Image 1 (cartoon, rainbow, N blue to C red):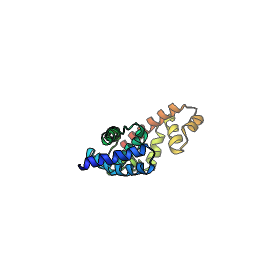
Image 2: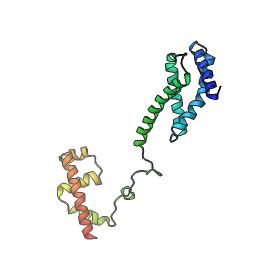
Image 3: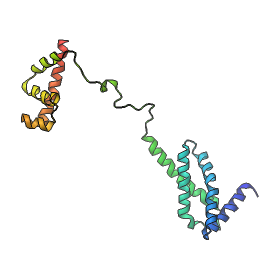
Image 4: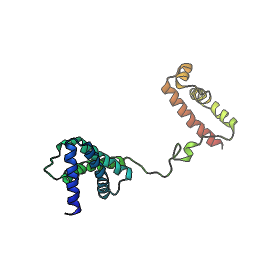
Length: 188
């Protein structure tokens, strides 16, 4: 009798005893199956991390526990077990593939934005030039810039104070900043 046949006899015997209510036999069966399943899953799915292999082993053992009453003691145990394992491994491989599709590998996670210039505030060398440029803006743009950017009012507060709609304030600020950039660029 070879090693495979001995394992088949021992494991099917333990499974029969477990089906008859022998808790110690069931514990022994699970104890013997764990390294067997681990080795087989590692051989089949070499790309998995050890923790993913352990998750699959536990899935197989849970499935075995859930369907243990369906085992026919007149039939070989290992093919029945490996059928369960095959289904759990297929489920695990699909989970792994779905998860891997959405992962992006990066060596260093950026703190805020990937472009360094995005994290810098604009600054102008001459505050007086900025004040003069703001005075050159049309009244609606100047008022919007002063309330939202200099006094830091909320859009709701600025809308209530100026009588302008929130949308109109956003447009006025956008156009005002664009005009300020042009004015200041021309001066430098």
